[in-house]
Image 1 (cartoon, rainbow, N blue to C red):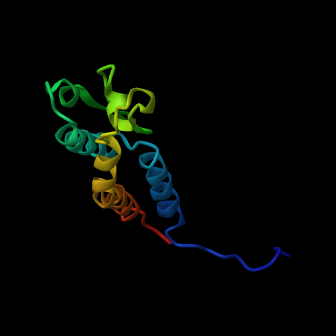
Image 2 (cartoon, rainbow, N blue to C red; image 1 turned 30 degrees about the vertical axis):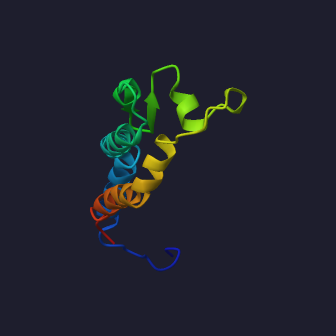
Length: 124
């Protein structure tokens, strides 16, 4: 006596392989992170207060497969972004508005990547 009916799933091996591949691809966001960071850095540099242009010139993007950072390297960058009440220096935000301005486009970049990877899942 066998133990009951046998179920056969056609395409299960293809599904398993394509899901594993999608999982690996979704571990690496390097290209999307680089594109997103570059866009925000470009807008931030354009929005930065300009006296000498050093602040705008110091805005840089760094990214890897798991994240991205936009920063400005001049010593007064944070003071420009957030202000300094004790010194009566008002905030002139440029990084946060750049991110907010690009928010929908950035979400679209990540959404497109997800859809592209998941469209490759095949089987069962």
